Image (cartoon, rainbow, N blue to C red; front, side, top):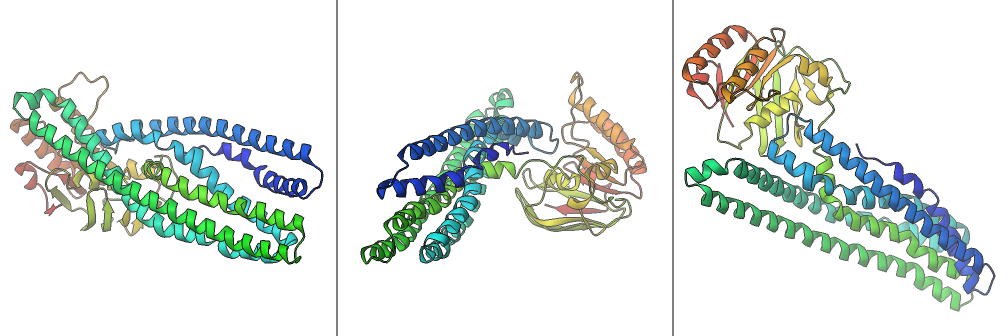
Length: 449
């Protein structure tokens, strides 16, 4: 999904770093090579400019791909889609332009510096080699807090965006029933929560920058001070001492920059984690859901936390609970539109993430909460009836997933639909999100979410 072709422009960077340090040490030490030094610096600037141009183009291509993926994903809520395709995809730019290049240079440049210093001054090379891991270690310790706070920040933003979209779509109804002011208060509360989570993430980012700068400065000092003392005692040539002093900061610079870009790109990584898995991915053949046990093994995702459930083959389950509890998320997990943050969804003992997605969807029948037909000239009740008819017509399906299937139907039509559904799903597994009492009479077990 992420375009990485701009990283090829970074191939000359380690060699240019070594060449610049060698020539700078030679010129300051009284040698020749000033013109060549200017040329190397110019080439280094040019390489970096070319890379930045390519990086911004790669970021644009990545944003286009992400928008297409999010807009084509049927399992993502409308409010979250609106947030992802606007603010979300823009947050990916620091990841592509800043963090990815620094992550590559954080490996290539220190490795090149240590190898060169090993031939020039083994003691300095060993000091750099020992102190280099301190930056990623401290960065990882602080980064664990960053991931947690960034996830909370994104969740707050997605909730705010989704609620605001729902308010805008239903503003006429809200005004008619005198609920506009109450929703304004709710939007302000969600905005305040998002601001709190953002400030919390920024505090951790500033703390991380301070820690990384302190560790990098101390590490460079551990290299520079001994070399300076040995130079005064005549234990090391001037050219070698200058080379060490110029290369030591270059070894730590990409790591410091990668640490800073890690926090700048945190939102982008959170967005990339939400990219839906392509429906055409390959995997093992899925079990027949009509004869396979379905197990939710301590699953956590979005508002659903540590959810466990065992569904026997042929059992009909009704999911009940308040709005936002995670009932539709459970159906999304079974469809493969939503991936667990923790835990597993097993079908016949096989992790749903490992099965062929297209083949699995072919074995299901699904009625979403709000069916969409193109062109959209039908009423909501008529759309619901068509969606139910198409789902019930999939006689080969072994698993029926129905999200409030009779929500837009009158009592008479609901009775007819339930009678047809009762016959068609007999002996097959069904998971139904139910709000109406009539649906509860058609299931074997009711599960509160």
